[in-house]
Image 1 (cartoon, helix red, strand yellow):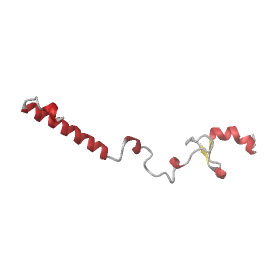
Image 2 (tube, one colour; image 1 turned 180 degrees about the vertical axis):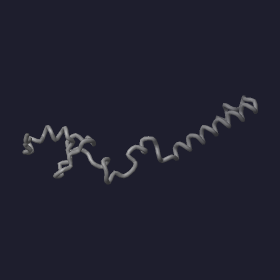
Image 3 (spheres, one colour; image 1 turned 180 degrees about the horizontal axis):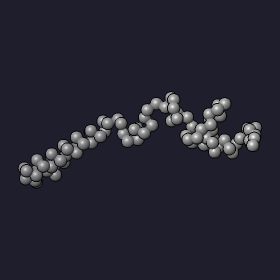
Image 4 (tube, one colour; image 1 turned 60 degrees about the vertical axis):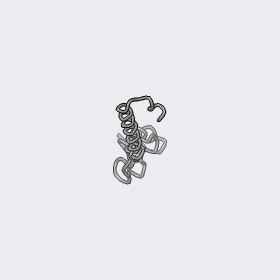
Length: 90
C-alpha cells in the first residue's frame, strides 16, 4: 500500500490514510458487536405465557386447547378429536 502512495502529493496521501483509518475503525466496531441482527430475535427466555407454548402437531401458537394436557391448536384438535375418542353432543 505504501508503494501505491509514493507518487501522490502529500495532501492526497493524508486523505488516503484517513480513509483507510476510518474503514479500519468501522470494520473493528462491527466485528466487536455481539448483538447482531439475527441474535435479537427470540432473545428473551420463554418459560411462561403464550409465547412459551405451541401446538404439538403443527407448532402453531394461537388457539391452543390446553385442557387435559392436549396442547393442540383448535384446528388440529378438530382434525384429530375423533381418533382420540372425543364425541360431539348436540
